Image (tube, rainbow, N blue to C red; front, side, top):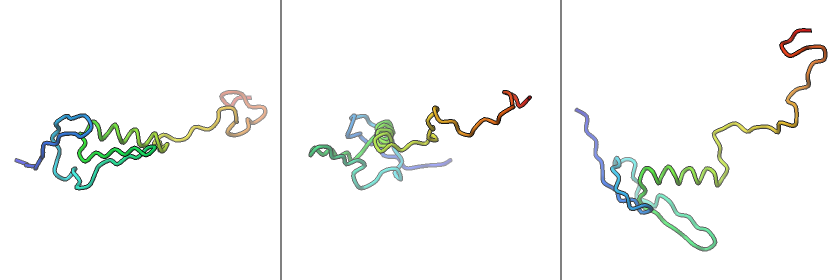
Length: 89
């Protein structure tokens, strides 16, 4: 039978209690945000808040896992004259 050590963590953001593995926790603050002179620090985040903050951060710095879409107005390659839709003449 496998065992693992878990700790009950109270989220600083939503006050929810969450069980987390000992290896997931860090000794420093998980999130430190400063905006217009106002600073917010969260030491412990639950899984749901951690995923939400990660999503906010990716959108804020415009990190995207999706490939960039080129402008549809510009053609990718010029069409060959004389060929129809499925390659027939």
